[in-house]
Length: 436
Ligand code: IMP
Ligand code: MG
Image 1 (cartoon, rainbow, N blue to C red):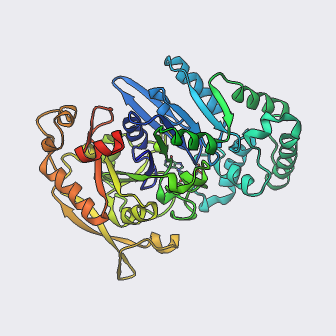
Image 2: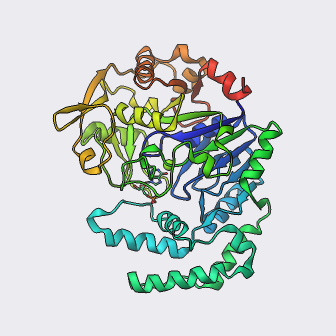
């Protein structure tokens, strides 16, 4: 196994940042392939906490990182995160796709304006300009990194003119920056030391051919995927594993394996159906203990029980054979634990997700109860050091139940935010780190 795609199986915030950080030890290159600075990836190493919105997480370990063509790049955020790395004494080695689209302040403004206009039908976006940038990409007026490199192309001026006119006409508003200022920021981004602009597909393929190991780091999650998620309450990119191919230019047959990340319970930020959502005490307890507040927006996340119907669906659309189950420690002392195994849809027991958001919002969860676990005598860090044998039996049972329901294999668990609070199954360790 030379390449691994790591994706979220829920509505984002599954703990991908931490898992990618742990796994990236065994890889040479870490690649982002979709989304933009709507993501929030947190890595905790002892007392150090690194938070990235755009930069691939592998940068913390000094790996070569790639931002593929499928990502939308906000230069202001990228500059900030390059600065953040340098401050931590790390030299970024970043490959930036010449085909990636650029988020401008105009897109950020339009994101907010559109949400206001939608009123009750709003999506609850992160207001980072993600949707409007992907829309301009599809409308074929977007600006790409190559347009900045070739400043004589006139693409930036063309975009600015069309966009300003549209803002005036549709939103009775005007751009907060001028085209000259915009170009200055864009040029500053590509002129940074340690940043290379090239064809990400060619770069990654050559690396794979010379036996380097590549990890593809997904953002958001399957249920926020534009095609497979709970439309219209979704993000504006494909976040499933197959996007690792289109979002980088690496052929799909070079993608060897898919690992899906899933929290031991469920959270969602923003609007949209959420059948296992808990109103009340247990939900508040999970939110507090799990620090379930948005990394990007600070919004409190909606919390609910593990939804195995949604998880089975996400495992299927991603083709995930391996699972990482995160934040198990948060469920400690919550007894019994509920897990949703089917939905009641108009009196009919259903085991998959309806396409329509209206139908989905009426789905009632059918729960099964499992014994929860108590806090072991040792702290979680020591439990992790001692390996799988030392985790509570009820937790092991919880994991077996997930495996049975999804037909995927738990390869890794996380029982705390720190790198050290992770257990990797011995069989998976060999495969993940040595490529056997
Ligand atoms: P957008 O991606 O900013 O357009 O937001 C669309 C929806 O996706 C909103 O419900 C956001 O809260 C959600 N979303 C986007 N990125 C993330 C993420 O990284 N984690 C969790 N939710 C996200
Ligand atoms: Mg996040």
